[in-house]
Length: 209
Image (cartoon, rainbow, N blue to C red):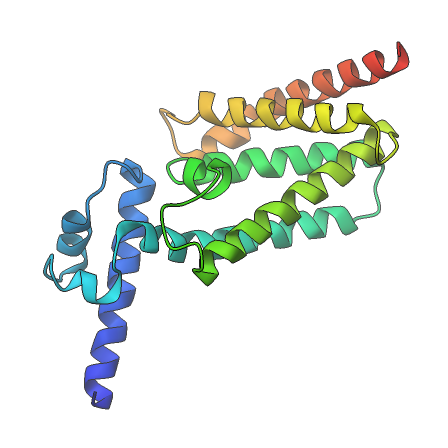
C-alpha cells in the first residue's frame, strides 16, 4: 500500500468512527445499521467491512476512550483530600453525568455483562478490566463513607443498591427534551439529594444492626 493509499484508508477509518459515534449517540446503538454508518461516512456498505468486521467492533473502538476518561476522572476524585461522604457524592454525580452524556451508548459500554465479539479481543478484555477497576473504586468509596469493614456483608449489599439507584436515575432521564448538559445542570441538585437520602438510609440501617 502506497503512502497516499494508507492516508486515504486512515481517513476513511476515521470517518466511519465519527459517523458511528454520531449515529449511536443520537439514535442509539440498536437502531443503527452498518449500511447507515457507511452511508454517513461516505463509503460503500461493503467497504466498511474492510475496516470493521461488525457493528460491535465499532462500539468497542468508541467505548474504550470514554471508559478510560471516566476511569481517569474517578481516580482523580478518589485522590482528592475531602471527607469520604463528599467524595462518594461527587463520585455518584460523575457517574450520573457520564451515563446521561452518553445515554444512547451507556447500556452497552457500562452495564451489559459481555459483548458479542471474540472473547480474546484485547479491547473486550480492557473494557472488562476498566469495569472491574471502576467497581472497586466505587466499593472503596462506599466503604469509607459508611465506615464498614472490608468483609462486611452489608458493604456489597449497599454497593448493589446504590449502583441500581444510579442506573435507575440514568435510565429515567435518558430521553430528555433538552441538551444533556442543560438537563444535568438543572437536575444535579435533585440527583445529589437522592444520593444523600439513600446514604442516610444506609447509615440509619447500619446503626440499627
